[in-house]
Length: 564
Image 1 (cartoon, rainbow, N blue to C red):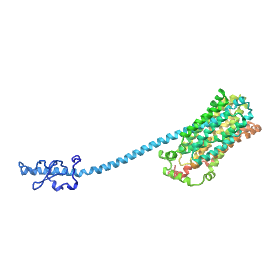
Image 2 (cartoon, helix red, strand yellow; image 1 turned 90 degrees about the vertical axis):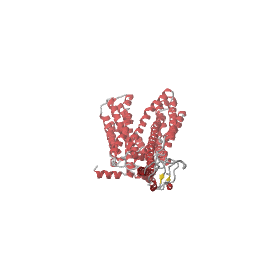
Image 3 (cartoon, rainbow, N blue to C red; image 1 turned 180 degrees about the vertical axis):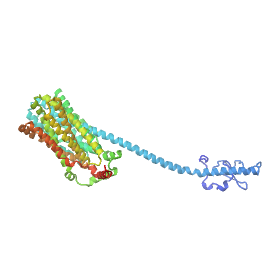
Image 4 (cartoon, rainbow, N blue to C red; image 1 turned 120 degrees about the vertical axis):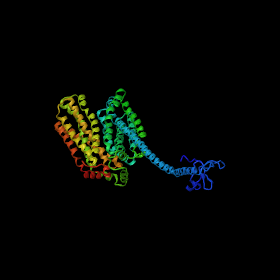
């Protein structure tokens, strides 16, 4: 191709035939039998230029024959170059096509990497907002608890009046969880419910700091209870939206640690401000923080990956992990089927696993509140320990609970990854059964153990570890057995038995201790722990909703064929 100049080419129809190319030279004309010269198409010399002919006067016939053969060989080489000149175009076309395919694959890989980075970054921002935001919910929920003593001294309120202010809060809180779940599913924006609810609780705490009468205090705190339910249930829906089932336990349990974070910091914040300035400052500080946190949550948190142009959590996990059950196409088909299936309420009512886990939720909170209400009284009455020391001995509950919820999520995730052919909800239920049995053992050790401060603290830490495990997994496992569009509603329904269990733990246990003493109190707690493990035993192989719609049966069939 380099032999042919880029300009001045004649069209192929004007090129000489191979027969006329015999005896030519690359830089001259072609001699003909009658002595005429034919020009090659790539020749750029003017017609008037003198040309050297092959048969000169000084050349002998023999030497002319030799030169004729050599020049014929050169002509054949030139024709080969001409024929080869057409090949680079086809080769270049192939190379261009191959380059386009390689570039397309590189662009796809680059786009996929950028999408993956964007998914994880947006998810981390949303998760951080959930953890910090729900900790601030605890600020505005428990602020009154830690300014009550200062209010009594400043305003002269009695204990009955203080109890009246907070008497309606549990009822409002219980119903607000359900309402916030329904609104999150209907509006499809848990971030909106979460952030607006947080800002409203902040406004109500600020309003509380400006009030002066018990009826106004009671009304404001009742409204605060109505907005407090906007915290946990929208977070449950966002956790389902952003985290696939294979790793949801780890993230859910990490989010659940915000309970402990908020419970640990609010005495320092509200109590410290009340002691340093006044009870009004103790209410005003959490309120201002809630307003700021709610505004930031509304700006930076996202409802779901799909709303920001990203694949769903299950699709993202399927493309990221080769061992996932199913593929992205199946996921899309399933999500489409969800929209055309039964109504939300019909699916929830028919869900037997949801009923079983709701019963367990009642017993777990019944036991939890019973121990928290009466453990320090037991230590004081039985062993003559001062009130402050008794409170210190039961303080291990929160630390043990923090570890318990994290370990429960990690263990349940590991079981699901280790045994993908088994029902994911059933595997999490097995972890809950083990925790309930451990709670019975912890209560027994607190009852029969020696009155040593460190041992009693360890018993309470073990009890907190055992109770917070199922408390964390119950709601998460319940929402995993329903479609995503019903996740918040299911979480709101599961809040009812928990709050009922807390309410019922007051008077029944008081009568039990009064009539039968501590010898009747502790055996009852142990029996309730065993019942909580029993009610969920029939569901130990229940699949999650995603498994039931994607290939759980296929996985079981493959496992049976391979003898797994």
